[in-house]
Amino acid sequence: MKRILVPVDYSDPSRAVLQFAAEIAHRLGGQLTVVHVWECMPHAPPDLMVKGRDGKPRKLAEVIRDNAEAEMRQFLGGAGLPEGLRVETRVESGDAAKCILGDLDSGEFDLLVMGTHGRGGVKHVVLGSVAEKIVRASKVPVITVPARALAP
Image 1 (tube, rainbow, N blue to C red):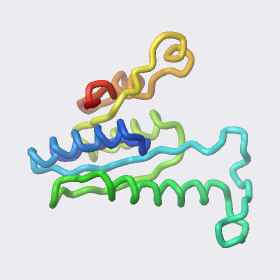
Image 2: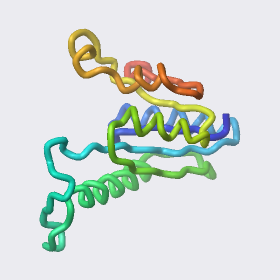
Image 3: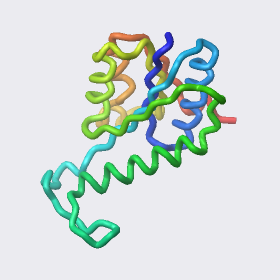
Image 4: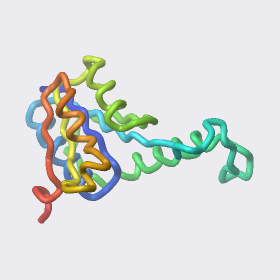
């Protein structure tokens, strides 16, 4: 269990899950790959142009990717990970469950550590659960950590 994938959404609970996964990796002499999956607006055309920070037109997907990468750097900068821990990052676009399962299917990873938001009832039935989809289809062991388990 030396190659650990950790999906994050930049929330406080996902920071706590990252710290939990980092502790596992640190104790096992492993490494982390931290992934954030973003989905472009479903009704926006893929070549939709917007004005960038420099005032020049850019594709919306490029602007979102750039922002997600900047947020990843900021997120990791404040994560307080153990010294010397090897950490790689990925920012991907698409359906979160499909992207994460694709990463797992690559054979690069031995373990997935991810948080759950604990939605229940109708909201869970309507929205589904990314964690549930991944647990059902994963070819590697998955540790799911409910947000309430990491609360102080």
